[in-house]
Amino acid sequence: MFALAGSLVRSTSTRPTDRLPPRTPTRSGTAADVIEHAGAMLDASRRWRRDGKSIGLVPTMGALHEGHMSLVHAARAENDVVVVSVFVNPIQFGPNEDLDRYPRDWARDLKMLEGAQVDAVYRPAADEMYPTDASTRVHVGGVTDGLEGAARPGHFEGVATVVTKLLAAVDPDRAYFGQKDAQQVAVVKRLVRDLDLGAEVRVVPTVREADGLALSSRNVYLSPEERKAAAVISAALREAADIYASGERDPVRLRAHLAARLALEPLVQPEYAELVDAATFQKPGTLAVIAARVGKTRLIDNHDLEKPFPG
Image (cartoon, rainbow, N blue to C red; front, side, top):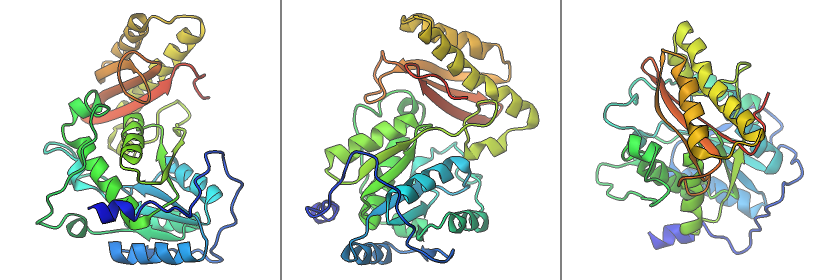
């Protein structure tokens, strides 16, 4: 365990915090190397390291959309080598969640990634990631206690475990995550900091549809009527940002507005609408976070009220 963590820290690697100049893609063609085993992935990373190349990792569960591709483009601009992992992580799903029906389209995913000049796709099998005798899980305390952590027991333990394993196999300079999963971002930042994992966590803004709905692989579950109703989530965030910009600072009134706006759409059943600190996920704060069910589909979204809502 200690040797594994140590392998992620490189004294010869610099990790600048300022945005880097665009990199020239290392591949002249479009085919990406598909790597299925952790040992082979680490061997490839070591070769890139010996050649003096920087590595960016984009972890995904597949079913790619433009939100994922925005992460890929950010990684492509900042690194010599881009690795995208495609792995539907079974241990971050609860017993009554959508693991079995989570959308999967490997051929489409690979085509999209090759079109973006990704260097390698890391696609491990579940039984390799989690052998039957595996007994180790990674728990991040504090930031996982409320909201998504409370609604989905064990979810963030699954996230922290798979992210640790991906960082061990890919050994990246930078790892890219979307702001849409804000609590996941906070968990990963704490994980990387507390375990000295070395990678810089880059956060990319949420990509939205024209009506504001945050892109999500689970949006495909929505019926046309549900899809229309789901736009109330981003509308509530937008209006809360406007109210905040007008001078309202009382978190009770801001939360009440979020709840009232969501209540106007009968197809949407809110699970929570809160204001939290973006780093700790403790109340109060300026990050408005919402989870709601639209029909049978659970959606999440968030926005920092100190910033104008996009669009």
